[in-house]
Length: 425
Ligand code: AMP
Image 1: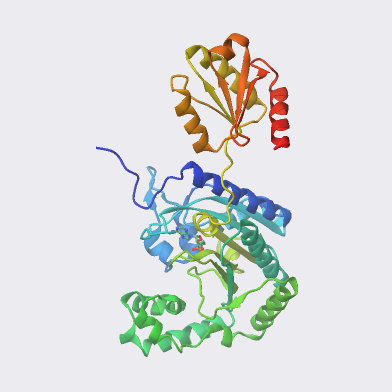
Image 2 (image 1 turned 180 degrees about the vertical axis):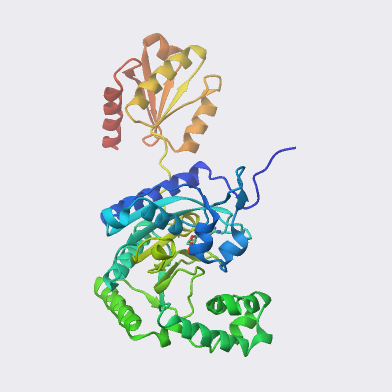
């Protein structure tokens, strides 16, 4: 019996992997232009890091975490997200003193035991960034510029940034209570999950997907209408800075984000063509988090993108993977040795070369060349071996060039000969 992968865990095959590399390198280039330095974080953390930051009543901590007891009795978890680890590392590494304003980015796998579907896996990859030590609206606006620039550079189809304010410790508690009260009055219309959330996490009632809950909450009070004066001023300033920078955002008063640590600015990026899992990324401000994890009073804002969803949303715009430049077609075992040595020399100069099996007929080798889309086939048969020279078949110009170069020619000289052929047609 064959052994399959675990449900929700997937393999990334070379074609997709190549596109993911482009996404990772493009976003890294932009993050670095914005002054972010990379932080590498462990995959395993103590479980309380997440219960204290993401929130004990969040779906992630309640139902989705891969937590287990280590051999020494410690309860540890595969990280479900990156922000908590960044903040832990920031405090542990003494950065509040050495780097009062820290700009950190990370990427890597995250683990959540969700119900798998298209765009939702139990292991997925995030690219994230955190800006710590800035509580001014300029930091929020700059973060959203960064988010927009990354999506644009990657070519995310139908990108749309949605924004909301979740208030702060001054205005959220009263709103939370008003929302819970509103929900309690409609208890019989709510799903079981929402009933359970009512006391612990009533904001989540606003983003429940169940039709009954949506109808019940249609006229619910919104945080954005009940912000205290400082939160209102902060939000207005973020919006005007974004308008000045030319970044388009759309108000979504129902967006609450799942995690407890957000305050004030919250945002999500959605893309078209992804079905129900259409958020490619999200983030927000989390001014109390550093303190909650035992550090000083330091503000922060950040975001994370899901690489699998970025890849799905940018597939149309992605450049096709380049074909190898040369296919070497040896005929017979003796030619195989010459072909291998020639390929190795060419590859050492960075040229992509494939070598066919010397035991296959030339016709089959040429079919493979067509399939790969290579332009040059270097044929090494009996005659070529005898003369010590290679014949090159140019598949674009449909022309044979017998004895074009010597089999032991310098690799750069061979490339120059091929470049000349490319230039004439
Ligand atoms: P979150 O940390 O929940 O705000 O998620 C940030 C981004 O990570 C989302 O917008 C998705 O693009 C991605 N993401 C979250 N959960 C999953 C998952 N289970 N599978 C794939 N991508 C995910």
